[in-house]
Image (cartoon, rainbow, N blue to C red; front, side, top):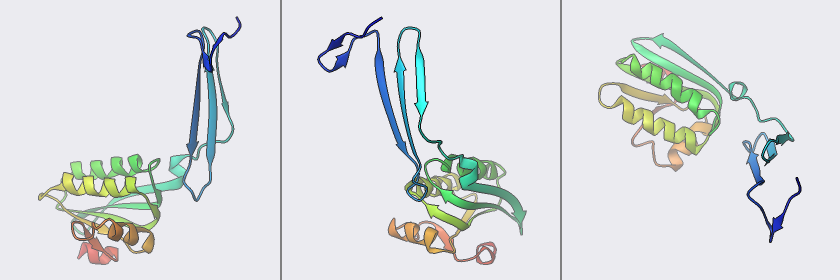
Length: 163
């Protein structure tokens, strides 16, 4: 079956979708996929692999001194934030008196990560004392730039946050 062009558009028998996604700037990963869908045909061409979120961010949870500590290491961005959010929500569900989010080993904190921190703070309410460990400029700077240091309890070390 041939294509009939109407101006620059294809007829209803065929649709063309171009999807372009860029990964985190530090990774310079790109994925360009073109999917052509006809009545009985679908093809996807992938030019580069998108990074696996589990390799960009490691998350662990552990009890410590009457608190639950969620520790993150790596990049917190749009791709990895859901994984961290899941761990935080599981910790909140335990209703600990204190929740410590240790971001000491976070190398990048995007707006998605900042939104996650604000949401977690709101979810904790008055029942859970949430504290954040921001030991490096990779986490301190975005929190300060967004003016969140006044709303969130930010500490320079895990020991301070647990005290």
